[in-house]
Structure formats: structure tokens, C-alpha cells
Amino acid sequence: MKTLVAATFALAVIALWLAPLADAEDRPGQLLAQPQVERTLRQYVLANGPWKADQVEVKAPAFKSVLLRAGSLVLRVAKHGKVIGPGTQSFLLAAEVDGKEETQFWVRSEIKVYDNVVVSTRPLAQKEMIAPEDVRLDWREIGGAAPRPYRRIEEVLGKQVSRSTAANEVLTIAQAEPPQVVRHGSAIVLVYENASVRVETSGEALQAGKVGETIKVKNPASGKLLQGVIVDAKTVRVQ
Image 1 (cartoon, rainbow, N blue to C red):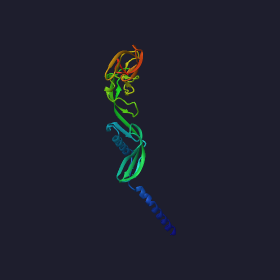
Image 2: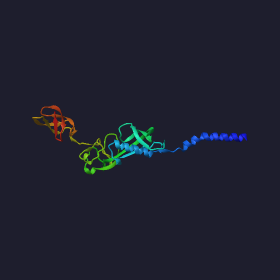
Image 3: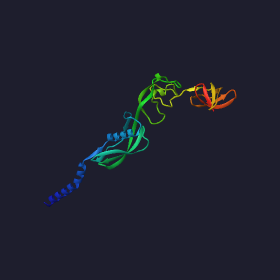
Image 4: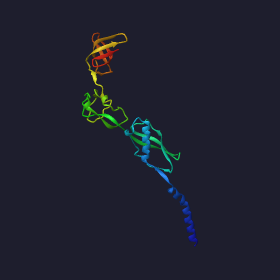
């Protein structure tokens, strides 16, 4: 009989000890999962970036779900590591339940941005001039690093490609550039002018260049070497 009483007492003590653990396991809570984190990050990126809703995709592939106590949950970005842009970035998120901050955690995200950009419709040879039939607009992912892609067809017409370009290749500002209008050795008109006088004389280009570039020129009549800014294919304004 004593043995039975002792065993019963021991079981009662164990039951009392395990009761809080059972309550803790049964206590209602909520799981903060990846989709909610991604929605919060996307809203933040759209609010703080220059893009429209259909241009932005935000993923947090490595995020693991977090268990929080039950209640009204508010998730916000407390800090981000750098200027928001395409690529991999980290954000510090704060989770509040019923108005009280429960936890903070860093999330590594992948941001993709899409836009209509100018692409080639056919292969283009180096230095080839770009005509309207050579390009089209296409919806592509754009990166954050320079050089930036052209976004309007009008921007590339009349330019030349700086290197051989394949069909369906995105054209950037480094790849489609103004053509060289003056060649080395070309006969040109040298123009000097100020507020009261304008002088024109024949000259020779000692360098090739594009409109707006400064090149070396020669005045054959005087033998002087000068520098000037290319105005057009035949004119250089000298100092």
C-alpha cells in the first residue's frame, strides 16, 4: 500500500512539473513567414525607389520562419545597408506585436528591376551606324551597375556601336556612342570668335573626334598648333 501511495504521489509531482511545458506548447502564436517578409521589403523598395510596381521583384530566399506571440503584427524596415537598387541587399526588420517590439533581425534580399530598354534586332559591326530598323524596345532585367542601358530608341539613332554587337543585345551608353565626324588629317575650318569679332581660316585636324570633343588642329598658314572643340564635321572652334 505504501508503495502505491508513493508512486501516485510521484506521478502527481511529475504531472505538476510538466503542466507549464504543456501550456507553453499549446500557447497560441503566429509564424512570420517568407511571403510576409517579401511583401514588406517590396513595399519599402517601391516607397523609397524610383520604380513602378510592375518593375520590381523582391525575394528573400534564405529567410527562415520566425515564431512570434499571438496578436496584431506589424512588420517594418528599421534600417537598410545602402542605397536601394538592383542586386543583393540587407535590411534590418523589426516585428511588433500589439504595439510592442518583439524582435529585430537582418534579412538578405535579392532585388530585381525590369524596364523597357533598347536592344539590337540584328548583329552590328564595330563603328556601324544605328538605323531605326536596327533596334527595338524589349522588357529586360536591368542591373544597378554602370553603364546604363538606353531606354528610348531616339537616343541611339545616328550613333555608332563601339564594338561588334550580337542580335538581341542591350545597348548601353558605353556601347552606342556618337560617331566620329572629324578624321585625322581632315581639312577643316578653324573658327575664332568673341563678342565683337569672328575669324575663319583653313585648318587641318591632327586628331579624330566627335562633336563636342577637344582635338589638336593646325593652322597651315601660320604653322601654329592649336586646340579646338569640334562643332560639326567641317568646323572646329579654337581658343
